[in-house]
Length: 427
Ligand code: UDX
Image (tube, rainbow, N blue to C red; front, side):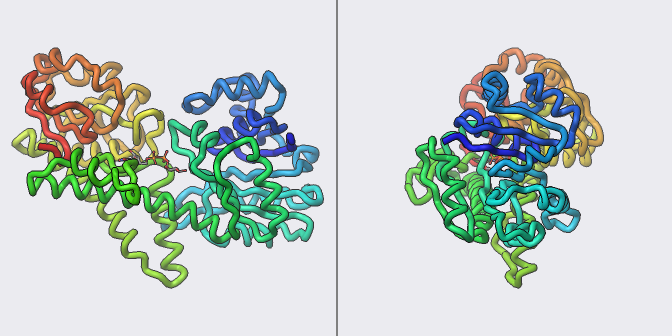
């Protein structure tokens, strides 16, 4: 049964939610104050790099199930479902910054139709839905928490084939009405209270970040005890209580969510009276992982890095996205800069030096970045790095050395080519 949906905010979450809800058959209008972005969207230009989203955007426009507006006209706010997909960035003190979401709730409250449901998709501290309810202050309007679990690079798939849909509501009738929106999907729908739904979101991201930090620490142990992390992760991950995903060693976790959500949960816990030392240790372990990779580069070069030319392959926080927010590649590269290294960058999607990096040259090919360098460090697991001409690179590098911080390449074949190859936790 098609429903009338208004999405407020057209970032990763808002745009993905709007396009997918239209694809599921609903009538969707997306609102954003960014006039240029709305104009682009109206003409079918997708402002974010997300596999499958441009196609869903044009399909939504063609079927007229998806439309965009730069103004929150009254009729748009009269729709039955109002999704809040607003930024909840990390404030200086690590807490979630909720001004945007509060302002929107305040500004729309009197326009909402009776029986409207405000659905919050933004990641918010536990208890925020309750505060939103108080701000809206209407007996005839419910606030429901419906957290998203969209990974950048696979957001469409994660929306249309989720492991589960979480709906947090204090009134079962409102919960059922939101569940109805997803009736075309096969995924299990888990209906809980608001606070629990908000907590599930932080719990999921924190647990996944902890799992990544665990495998990174395990890789360090493997190096010391002569084990192989790929074999250990395989043995560990086939236990269905552990699961094989998020056991890939790397330079650490980053992105626009993990760092923010981890800090927010630590702060939320301590504000509520619990010192979440386990998570604090995970946050520390992640910073140590950046240091560990920089140390590996220094060790591979075998001398201080001052003035040494280093090729850095990968700037995004992971493959499949153009997002550099809180990228471990940038954190590690900044450490190398502080050691005096001269950095040559190549990334398939990043063509200019991201903020957060005080120096370095971004090349438009891996070959030009690698020429005459004394070590190559792989910081993002772009599949195209496997198919680079490593035989040629072995010749054009000043020193044929690789630190593969994503365990992307095969050690034996790189060593057969003549590289001094190191990676994480592998023999
Ligand atoms: C994450 C959550 O997965 C998603 O559910 C939530 O809605 C938003 O935050 P995303 O930030 O896109 O999604 O990144 P994700 O794919 O989870 O990876 C997070 C970080 O962990 C990246 O830096 C990635 O490189 C790293 N990672 C992930 C590893 O180092 N090893 C792994 O095995 C998996």
